[in-house]
Image 1 (cartoon, rainbow, N blue to C red):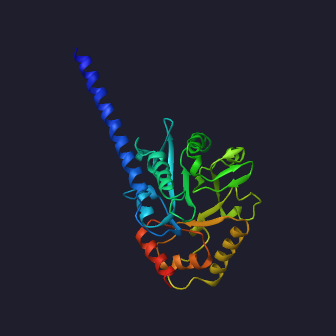
Image 2: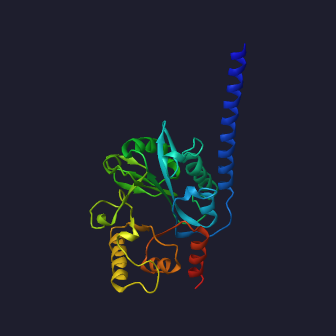
Image 3: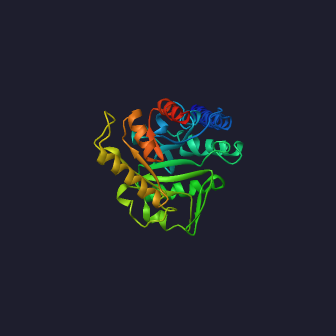
Length: 281
């Protein structure tokens, strides 16, 4: 009898935990579907977005049009975290990003921001690339109605475009007849013939290519190199992004002027303020 009551208590606790997770997920979806009135900032990218108090939702409230989520494959689930030791069962890719984005698209007339630009979800695979992508691909298929899709090499744009970074399984992605994601390239790929439908973006570490950190004037050779990178990316219809850039208006200004598509930051409010000041000029 004692063991039976213990079983019932355990079952009740488990059901309560499931109900709690479902309530949290439903609340996130509801918050996303009832957006703050804000005009979108196409160049704003939230680096490690999941580390903010309200993943995705804070970025949306600041007008960001691109966010980054790191994921691990754990017991068949895609869990969002920067380090494996920090994963939590309720912080799934679906709960934090895919479900809220789908809610926004449904209430936004087919876009994350009503009448706004396409939204980018950059997913950084932190665990084994091919194994993680196999699960991710099946997961993304459930959200096909809002995602940019490639069929037989032809891109069908959607409200949200997914780009895979980190442990990038290029061979597995390229082999799919129908897929819901592209792959993030590096500056070494700028001259590659890889189609933009497969590699829609190139990203790299700013410090690997530039010594300037926003103090004083950018050296002329570095400014020329930056613009050459942008021109090469755009010539092949790719977006370009740098990570590891100082949260510095001088850097943001050079990136904006050069035509860098996504400006990487952890400072949501700071970058929003800067970009809106440029809009008003």
